[in-house]
Length: 120
Length: 405
Image 1 (tube, rainbow over the protein chains, first blue to last red):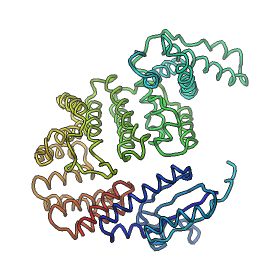
Image 2 (image 1 turned 30 degrees about the vertical axis):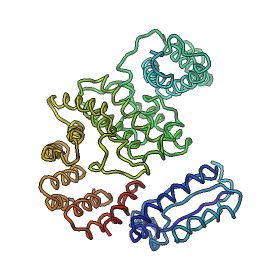
Image 3 (image 1 turned 45 degrees about the vertical axis):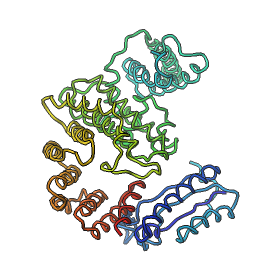
Image 4 (image 1 turned 135 degrees about the vertical axis):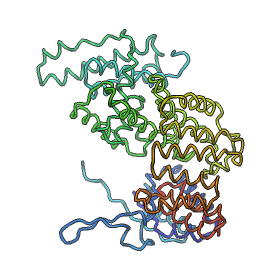
């Protein structure tokens, strides 16, 4: 089963408020997590996204498309990184997410990736 | 030749020679490129088992020609079978290497009609002899995506009727500028990757240096080619010192200079010294000269900043742009004090080209820190950390900010 494990905007804010030692530990933690998932053969892909302030939003308004700066959502609701893992089941995906939240204290969303993308 | 270098290296040297000879005869870049890739694959498998043949280039040439004939036959089955078959004499493998073939290939792959991602991918495949899978790994995209990109680029070459020829004299400087830019971008793709995490990407720096060196051998009179080669060597020489054991970026003034690669430095300095004597001085030579001044200093404190400032002044005249101004601001700060550097940075605040890069705030933060304004420096580091798209840079900037709390 594939799951997407999504991390939200708080991490960027935390980088600005936490002391240097925490930042160093956090990065070690993330590196170790990627390594562990990779070694376990569970990691499909993982990406970090640039800060929400760098985003653009494209919307449809009054019959035409409009591009605006930034996301509409508050930055704490904006995705800043994700892992896609291929694991036994939901319990394992939640275990991975719990490990992250234990460290960052920020919320994580875990969602199943749907099977069989449409044929191209 | 085959006794002194490895098979993979040998294949990559021969790839553009064989491809060039085939394209020159047939004019069909797309099919020849496929045929050569298949011949390279066949060689990798067969040579590993049976050893490298006596004349490896002829071997590749023959296998690729046969494959080409097969491809044309199956294609022409639907067309005028006999007429085409008559024209399918295999190319003569004993034909001497035409050195300009590789140049023609480079100019074709770096044609301004192609998009930049296509130019990079096609150059690495056709001139570098890398497989689609290797290029995909290096650019962190799925192999199917890279295969499509390469295939579209080849269709574009065919559809636009781009020719396998050297550009006419009047167009040569501009066309060469594009080729150099492509090689520079290939290098950067690899250089910006962090240590350990992405070895496929770091191979790109070596490949960019290899191809620039090849271009320098083919066009020794082009001072900017020598300049780019010097710049890449002098930059790559500091690669090991650029990150610490934990993967953190180490700024130039804190690097352990004993880790720098002295043979690359010597080669780079010799190249830039020779090329600066030529009539016209271009941006790559000047950037290489600046890199040379940096590496010539035994310690960061002994850096000849007035010399660097003078070189940035020339660079700003030859090739003006916000990034040059940004770098000159650092040199101004080192010569005339951080406040003077900050004043130069101020001229970039309204520059739209700087609005979406973290670099302005990153440099401002550094100069504010030098000026002793910790609060403003911390905020500027934080703004820069939010703006960068590079994870190692984001970590570095966040850490600098945290150190000022």
